[in-house]
Each structure stands twice: as C-alpha cells, then as structure tokens.
Length: 250
Image 1 (cartoon, rainbow, N blue to C red):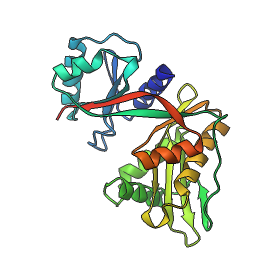
Image 2: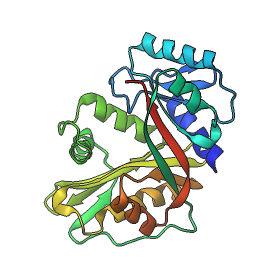
Image 3: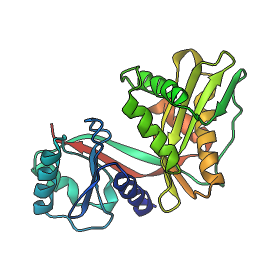
C-alpha cells in the first residue's frame, strides 16, 4: 500500500502547472503561488537517491525561487531522510496516513438544514475556499488563483464537495485529487465554527470518498490534523496505514 500511496503523490505533483523532474524526484510547481504546501517535491517510490541528487534538487528549488520542501512515505525512500538532514533540512512533522476502501466506508447522515453538492460556479468555489482558508489559518479571501486551482482539480477528475445551509451560506466542504492508479488523496475537510460538533465533517468526508468510489477509485487516503480529526475519519471507515514525512529547509 505504501508504494501505491507514494506513486499517487508523484503523479499528482506531475500534474502541477509547472512540474520539474530532478533525478529520482518530482517537484510540483505552481507559478501562481509561493506556498511551500503547494510547491514541494517527492521521490519516486523505490528509487535510489544519492547526495548528488539532493544537491541537484536544491539547485532546482533555487532556480524556481521556491523553498526546498518534501513530503513522502518514508518506507519508499528509507535512506532519504539522512541525506536531507545532512544537507540542512529540518523535519516538520511525521504523520500516519489513513486509508479507506469501499468495504469499510460508512455513510453518516448529513445534519439537518444542510445539503452537500459539488460547486459548479466560481462564486461557489470561492465561498468554499474561504471556509477552508479560515479553518486552516489562511487568508479568508479566496484569490483567483485559488479558484482556478480548484476548477482544475474538478476538470482533471478530482472531487470537490461543499455543504450549504438553508440560507445559502457555505458551512464547510472538502475534496480529493484526481485518482492516480485508482488511488486518491482526500484533503481540505473544513467546517465553519458555528456548524461544528454536529457530524458535518464526517458527512463531508464520507460523501467525498463515496463519489471517488462511485467513479472507480479503489483506495482513498488522507491525513488527520489531530485527535479530533482522527476520530472523525475513523468513524467514516478510514484505518491507519503507513508513515509520511514532512521535511523542509528553513
């Protein structure tokens, strides 16, 4: 499973607007934003990596004027962390990813007075992005680049779901990347503060995952941002998988 998850990350980064291949690495670059959480690299699973490869990777990040940063499944490149730390990288976090397959998916009810659907207009996308940015500590105003990125995600076969109240206001939402090898990452699950503790996050996560499975995806995966999120995802049918490393140069 680790190799399938890692390969899906490689493919997703290769779909960025300006991807760069550097030896065993792929850097997913988006000229519209300098965010290190959008612009980062990952190794191809099982590829041999040398210190010379890391040096070339750093040069590529400098050429792109982006902060060097990687995310990857540790078992797919077990010797890489030592090479990166020797080059000056610092570990940001280590997370366990969670996996869901069709046989484990649960379908909790959507809370009353709320509906889930895929946004079809840029104004709807902007409303959802604003909720996500607010939840994750970003700029509450959605930029045109943010909206374009979400539109591309949908056009490429990814999933985006928003929760809307009877008053038409966006209460939350989330999405998933276009599948790669029948594997897709679910991310950006967010709920506005007034709507929390009502089961909405579970309903959104389940709906996004169900839409993936209905379209033929075999494996959905995600990462939890804390114990509360972990419980939400386990209720929906996600189970612990392997380990991922986040590492960057300050």
